[in-house]
Length: 213
Image (cartoon, rainbow, N blue to C red; front, side, top):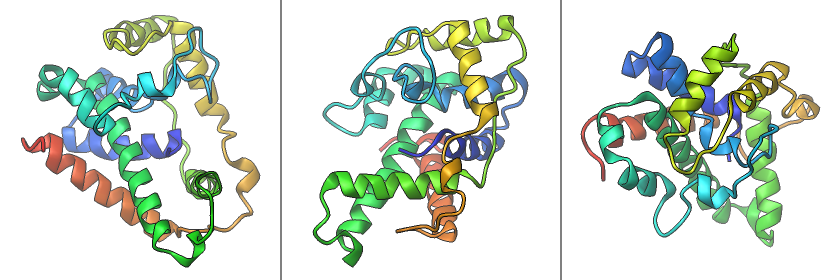
């Protein structure tokens, strides 16, 4: 999966397309992290839930499952639902590109899936170092407002304290720091820049332009 800085970098670009500002922009960007929060892999959280549950990982693509459950809110461009959808879409787009292309690459020959996964995480975390974002949550009341919006989604169960802990993780920004002197194994920065652009264009066509195929 892409890291939180990647999700927020992509989210900020989409927020501009949507012309979201103020509270709507913050709610959308928070939604871009929301599927990961209850997993507890990165942050402390009061209630842990399995990845499969929060990422709607059953039957079809996760983003299609989420859209099917929340079509009304997404078509109405409710920020937190759009952000949640965009997280799932980003995960799927980046993961599909990696596994599809490494399968055809000499680098992937003879590698087990776990070995491929480590290469994927290495390169995504290295790309993460190009960005440093946080949500700008400054008060308990602001966190409480976000928690109320988030908990409207059935797969989510978080508290304002959980959200403030997420903000601390973002500000601290330790993810991937040990890799800062590494080089990409499979990708290049330019290729990942292009992948992000293609992903945003694809999401915009699928969900912001009236085509939900």
